[in-house]
Length: 476
Image (cartoon, rainbow, N blue to C red; front, side, top):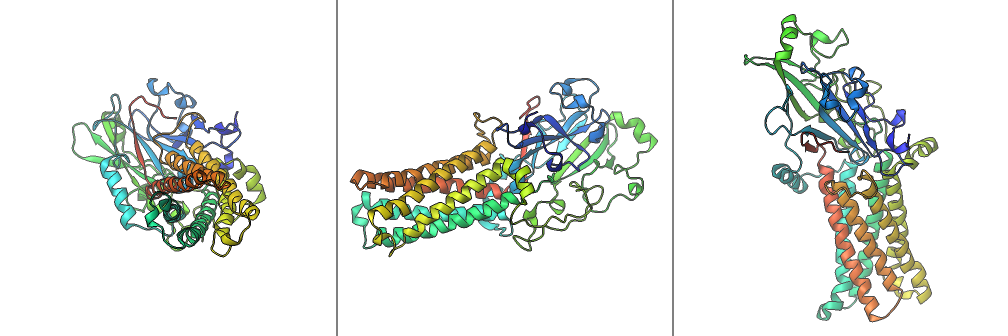
């Protein structure tokens, strides 16, 4: 089996969760020799509307035609794990489209937050961008820093390009002082953002985090009263486990004989809500940016039960050689972040040599070697990392992921990298048309970086995306 179609047992997401079964048919990655970048976990309910543990799900339940098979458990809730979402502390939930009613032939109804592409959800996330600044969240910091770095580069682009199209706007020292100083600051900000981006990749949780609390309620067809229960290993509204099931090891409340007899005539209403209190991502640690993740004591009903009762994984500055060989070197997101870091580091050399007092004292040869060449190498690195970030979100290498925010972020970063590569390519010459194109490339490349950074900022605040899947549709 290809490496991209199977997880290392030590790195399989949600391996400690007992109710979400891995659908092997949807475990894949776009590069055969790298780790999977996406997986699908499904929670099954039997004919009586009761959740079943993944050990009780028949092997054929993951087959593509199993849903139509009579008597087989039917997946109701789907957790879409992706390497990018995991790195960004996001929890993507997929619910079936029931159009306000229960799915035909099903006795399960789902009450979930509105889809992320609804107008109200989009407006709420845009409002968060104005009023919410979680500086303890490294994914937010990466996006916010790159946004300001891109703004600085846009200003730099105006200093370089505007005098060429509007000579009357030229003022003394505009290119040398304004352009040189903003180039140095912009390159430095990009370097800081790239360091945090790499640290984010190194500290991506390998345990997986479901991040949602699920509650079940049975409703009789002829009675307005409800008998509430809860899916195994899902977090209730109260943090206290039911007293009648703490000693027998079964997280499902005991059922009376009457309830068992009438279960098949009842429908199950599933309520799903974000479970921030038991999220195991480092992003919710508000005390510091690089310290120990939040210590969360987990009960048997917890939505994210790890191998122990308390999360003890600390911040990692550098991966071990063993982890680097066995995991990170095969992780597409880590490779993209590493290339971005090296590209930003080399590009920073050009930012340093653009400072007044250095740039204006360089010979033609030194200018080509210490100013233009680092921009060429750095720009190509930005193009490569942007493409790898796009590739990470795709099911196959040739199919664009139009509906994924991360794909558009990678796309605009790639376009920005092209602009920052063409600038020095034109800059090696002194002809007027080359100077014009070099300045123009920096201008539109900066705007492309800004667009990608703003989308990344939006993504960093959307920790609980919800997607609605049409009945019968099966996403990869």
